[in-house]
Every structure is written in C-alpha cells, then in structure tokens.
Image 1: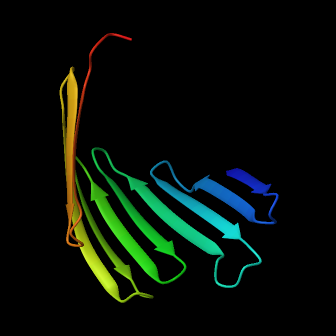
Image 2 (image 1 turned 60 degrees about the vertical axis):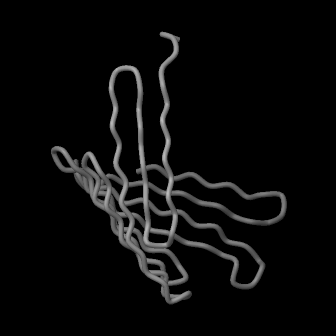
Length: 122
C-alpha cells in the first residue's frame, strides 16, 4: 500500500493511493480537493496484468468511464456522461533495437504519430 498527499499553498489537497490487491490486480486512486465549487476531482483505476496483456478500468467523477486492453496494440473505449459523449480509440507500437514508432487514432478525430530513433549508446 502506497499513500501520498500534499497540501498546496492555495489550499488544494491532493492525494494518491496504490494498493496491489493480488499479484495481478492493482487499485489506484487519485483525488484533488479544492474549495472552488465543482472543481474537486476523483479517479479510480483497476489494473489487471495478464501473462502478455494488461487491462484497465477507470472511473472518474463527472461520469467518465473508460476501459482499455493493451497487448502489442491498445484498444480503448470511453463514455463521458456529463458531456454525453462516447468514443473508441486504437493505438499500436512497433519497436526495434534502434527505433520506436507509435500511432494512435480515435473516433473523436484525434490522430497522432511518433517515431523516435536511437542516435547513440548514451
């Protein structure tokens, strides 16, 4: 069990918690409390680690639900209840000993591509 927190100079309180419920299942929680109306935030993550994959379920205040499945590619689905929006995303990664390339696309219109190449041993 790991607990961390801090009080900011403007009065905000932030807290984080991580607990390994089993060897494969972890619970994480993040919270930020503030005296401004409707600005406090909370989030819970359940992470499951399989032999060659990971899954994650995420719940945030504001009725945001998210689920993802990660193997060599990533599939994600989410529902933002407060804004009445849902989406589906897909990402993939390819790596060699000299470079890593990744791409991501989502039904929200977001597209991202990246490529990083190793130039030296350091």
